[in-house]
Image (cartoon, rainbow, N blue to C red; front, side, top):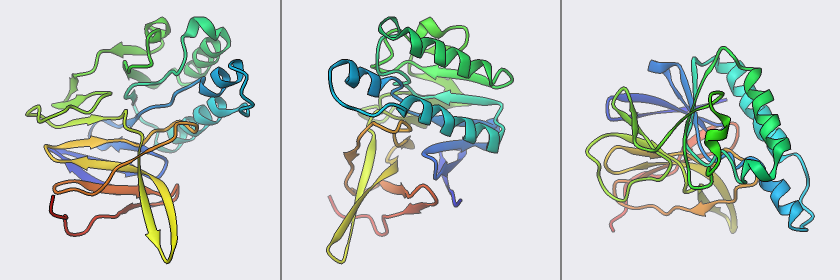
Length: 222
């Protein structure tokens, strides 16, 4: 699989086709927006949504951990889609999954869906957004303006639409924002996506699942 390397501040990050980032200096994997339990929530509401989204997301993360052997996994918010109290089976599944990776540190930034995330402590070390690691600010929500420091976030579920010969395709995307910021695509399998258009100073990188490709050449005028 083919990754892309970007520089955020003084930090070199690898954008992985699996919708995650590898941070070589810390031997860390970063990902955002798993939304575990989303399909089950729809089924409880009476919608015929297939099972397996949580298992699939955790299996994909298992594969990443096996392949990269990081010292730490950093989850940038919206790990959950539901309250753990309403889904005890999900609570147990996450704890069982965590136990399989006892040698890997797990850090979580609390997102807007993560109202009961601290119930997973100490299995996950939970922090409010804005914590720093080696000068890189870890967030769930992208900041609305410059914060004077490099940052990495999720929340947008960004996708980019590609058009060719009358056909179009929407692919998950990493978004390099002006002001030294990076927004990750959603890692979860049932998360949808919000289109992100080109603009001056922004660089977009789509992932096909096999490769990460830059889609912006010359930056357009505003």
